[in-house]
Image 1: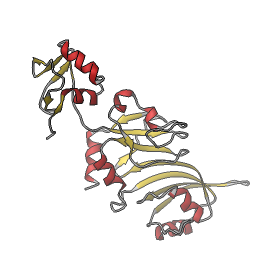
Image 2 (image 1 turned 90 degrees about the vertical axis):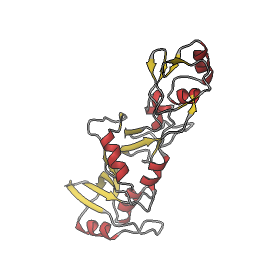
Image 3 (image 1 turned 45 degrees about the horizontal axis):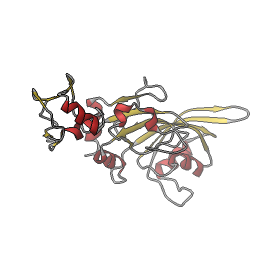
Image 4 (image 1 turned 120 degrees about the horizontal axis):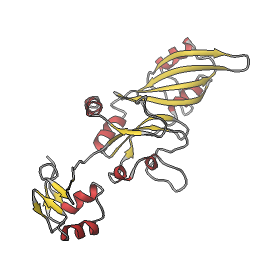
Length: 247
């Protein structure tokens, strides 16, 4: 059950307007709570139980948002940056008022699934090293990925800083051996999130990732209908499965 909160705070959280605007609207009699005109915007209300209307439109309170974004390359996984475009710049203002943040990160040149939310508890559960939440990537790799690489990734490889990775599942989808260059299409599932991990794992076996896309995070799978830069909120089923996977 949500705790009571000031009416102007609730409405501000929902993106209705500034505190001064909400105070003005209240004095004008435009705010109705449970059928009664509310002239005092500082009154305490119950976000879950009280029916709140602004100029005849119902204000439906919600505390958290969960957004699936198909992150495009060239955009950084941050809430703000003075030079670069961030993933939050791809969201509309009505979602930005919830102050979401990227749950984890994708490199600037990496695309694919990115979850944006303001639910710190779920974010912590998904990112905690102890949870070993699986993440699957598709990559195009310069070089011939073979059975030896599959075995090496399953055993764990040593990164450039001496860190030994957890076992990872490498699936070879295709190998194109041209005269000039050999390219391999692979899927890789890892259960940790070290800096540039996928790229560094392939560097450890003498190969180079030239394209990287995240497909899944836990039970959440990138919606194939989302184009680069597009987003949608999670369905109740997706959210429920994601939460169950972190318990």
